[in-house]
Length: 160
Image (cartoon, rainbow, N blue to C red; front, side, top):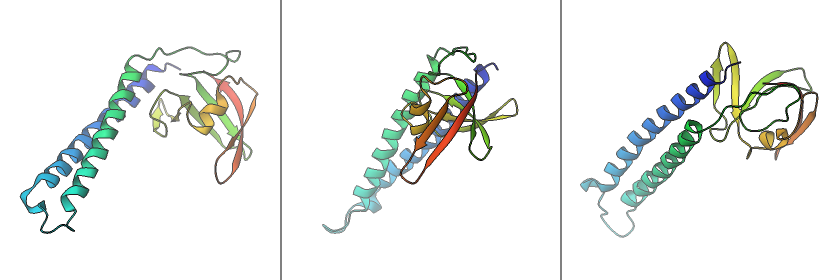
């Protein structure tokens, strides 16, 4: 599978998220500085709360800009059944119940779900429990992923 359309979709989604955050941050900033938000007394924190929201959105926008730059400069690698999993691997997994899923090991954007060429792909990062468990593994390996609530096992079917 050509991974370039996947990278393009990830970058499009991140760009759309960034635009949404900019609009939300601008709205929060306007609310924080609007004359109606000036405190009436020392207990009125409306403007302060709006400024915290604006700052949080600005911080998230910076994270998305960094993610976009990571994908812009990312070198997409080809994998086969004998190549250990690392960044840019597209991995087919099967859980103990026979459910299959495909994940892309990317530098950022964990949790994004995309459909490329009719295939649903979830982005995971090396910082996530699943991404961390997959690093260095190969076809036919089993990985156990523990979270706060449970442990799930996956069988690696293919690496692309």
